[in-house]
Image (tube, rainbow over all chains, first blue to last red; front, side, top):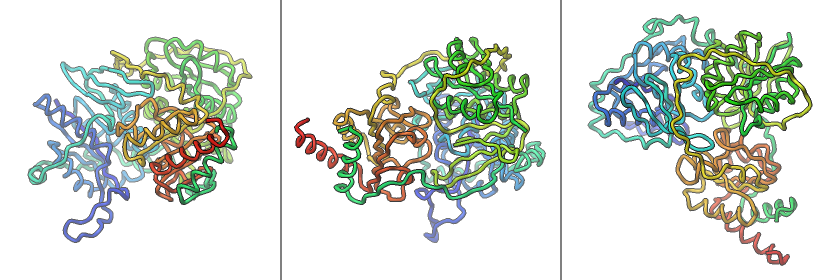
Length: 258
Length: 324
């Protein structure tokens, strides 16, 4: 079986900044693996641990320097990686990005396509659903306890009102819940072993896509203006527990809740 | 040119959700000839409720293909309807299901999709959406370049009951891949979340509580105030509190008289579920936390120290008035 894991390399948030191991300086312009994607990778590795005879392929779209981050994906256990990198892709929205990723995945036919489950306001929040539509495959979100047997995937899907046990035929597209697993760490020997693994960098023409279909020209949305938001309500801010407790108790009393 | 607008309806317990009521309201404002799409299995009752919402017509896609409101089958219904009835703008309510339907529809229609929109309006003939980014610190104006435009909204409204739209059946040929997911078993949460939705006071906790122990403090406070306890997604994902109590985009939407957020930074996924509260109290150690930008009372403190202090004060005051 082949499991493709879609990963994204993103600028670090403040809590994830990396220091250069040699100089001790903050690595500017460095990229890290998007945190939710680690759970998708872990789910793929666990499937390989359980089933054996499984190839785990990391698939990414991004700048060429993302190849360095994909080394981490290889160190964590992926067998190989594919990176589609082309200057023309910059500025792609959901519709355009899903085209690139789908084209990359069509060149790497897989039984299962896994993605990380992102927050609903994130740029990648809808990518799995768009990707499933592009690949014309069943889609399943918020998945945990993923198993595959006899061409059928079963998993738990957590929803607002509870959980469901669901099944779908493979191939299918699955977004993996953060609660599904605890991602493993790479040991030093894995980092060394990753050096001999393959990370293929492909251009748009390599995946058979025309430049018109990506970037801002291939996107269906535009950003017209960006401005500082006005605080919708900004009330009294108190700096101590005691003053805060009095203000909150007053508020509750005012609204006849005490 | 006036857009021809369709609102996709997400329903629960036979009624359109408050998020759907907002989508219907926005659709009506943009186009007096707006339509609504109700998809699901056995949704005639939902269609009748939507027919009173002021739209001009209600399209109903009903049948076993839509069991469990299958998002991919719903996207097939949107795709078919946009083609048949020449809608050029589709508004989706803010919900996990609608986001998935919108994303799949965007691909099938090759249409631009913007989400998290607080409003959609016409500006010299152009459709313009307004959303927040970077934890609500920035406002972004977005547009579309495709003939069909999809918009996922963020907001709620009261359902209207002042219309009598015609109800039309929509025949949809679903794609082979859209109906392959099978639900083998449902494991409902023990309660239905109604207590949280109805509570006059909601005390909610996030990662700043540091662990499940913090939620015991919140339970004491909620009990003293006759309220309910909620949790942010990160706290739920960390296993500190049940998913049923999750407030926000992938959880419950609440609008209590007072909302007390403890150790919650105020990420957009959370705030959409509580921003319509009458009064908001925020307790957080980080004075720059986004939640301080839209609270009525903010306390820069560790919630684990603040809550016992507030509890003590409430009990003293109750004692003084002889009520406790």
